[in-house]
Amino acid sequence: MASTRDRIVAAAVETTTSSGWAAVTMARLADTVGVSRQTVYNEVGSKPALAEAMVLGELARFLGIVEQAFDAEPDDLTRAIEGSVRDVLTYARANTLLHAVVSATHGADTELLPLLTTNAGSLLGVAKDVVRARVAPYGPGIDPAHLDPAIDMVVRVVLSHVMQPSSSPEQTGADIAWLAGRVLAG
Image 1 (cartoon, one colour):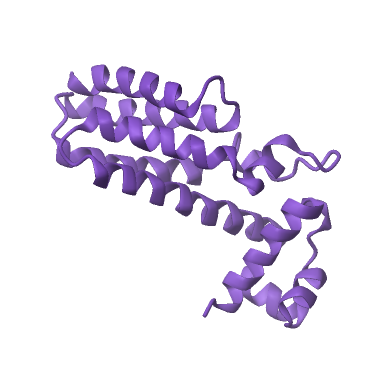
Image 2 (cartoon, rainbow, N blue to C red):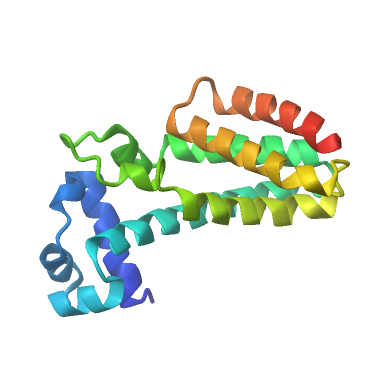
């Protein structure tokens, strides 16, 4: 059974995708989940903390996709990168929360967008840590001083394509994997 906190965050995601972030209030979440408004505050803190919880929860799902793609290609780093990029971009296309945040389809409701762009430090840090941990067992040929910048580059490019796709997930995955494969080979 989901915790009270998880139920509150899920209700916030549902409200954001159906009515926009501006419609998310602690009172509305309390009514939806069947708890007091104080319980909502105790579980998630402020509205900005709730927004971060929503984004980090979604990030965990995206990173689970990355993990699965790397697990599917334990002997080929380039193919693991290609699969993870393709699968992440495919998931992003159908992700209603991401679309609500990126497109601000609910008027001028752009308060969440900085969590994915200008204030994305924690998101980037978590993503880079996961990718670094998944790349290391492949023994890339790149020297250690350049491995972190290479991973940073790949994560930022993928995030850019999540935010504004320019091609199919398959083509973008192949392109990024080709580039990353060259860089990581040293």
